[in-house]
Amino acid sequence: MATFLISPPGVYRPQSDTELLSRALTRSGLARGRDVLDLGTGTGSAALAAARAGAASVTAVDVSRRAVQAARLNARLHRTRLRVHRGDLFAPVHGRRFGLLTANPPYVPSSTDRLPRRGMGRCWDGGRDGRLVIDRICDGAADHLVPDGALVLVHSAVCGAQRTLDRLAGRGMTARVADRVRIPLGPVMRARAALHEARGLAERGAVEEELVVIEAVRAC
Image 1: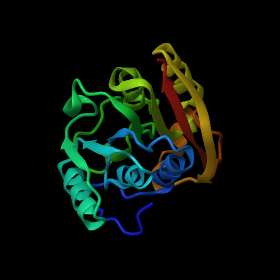
Image 2 (image 1 turned 180 degrees about the vertical axis):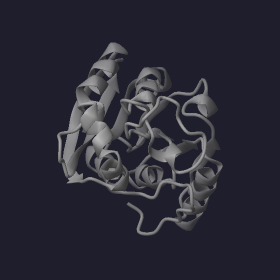
Image 3 (image 1 turned 90 degrees about the vertical axis):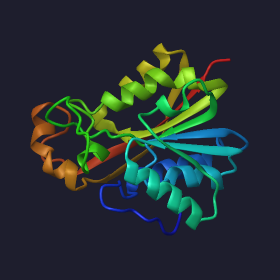
Image 4 (image 1 turned 135 degrees about the horizontal axis):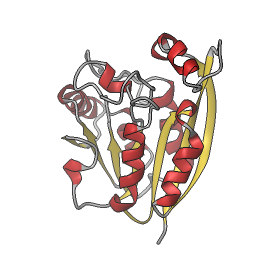
């Protein structure tokens, strides 16, 4: 990960999930020589990691105006060329295909399927099962990848890793869990522990959660 990133109010500050995604990009070698699209880029941390991992080009997208500004500023700060667009997931790159998609989407299960349109909740709220944004990425990935193109996605296991694998498989992609790590519950997960327990998404009294990295490859 970059040693210093500007993260203004309202923009997701890189945390354990961001670090796990960046590490996956470095270890897998999937970014090398490929055109990369980073969805929901935030500060641009994963986009910068893809560039350092040898990407031919990196395009980053975020729905937040502040995030777009932060990613552009961080790219300049680290002397890295990023194309940063404001928009909802694949909308700003309609018709384009990439060699690699990366994403650390909002995935925290929330009280409603109505996602916030502003504020910090937009950075992590993923709907009642945490999958509203995850599923949209899974559904659109193959249409935005070249043959043999790949997706690297990180999310909490409370959202169901197998559900992600199955959904990607249903869209013609070969998917696997590439990495897992257990971390202490963060402030948002702790605040919603009772909600998650009541829905059977987390064990009672859990103090940790598991993060998973999903890698998926589009068939030729």
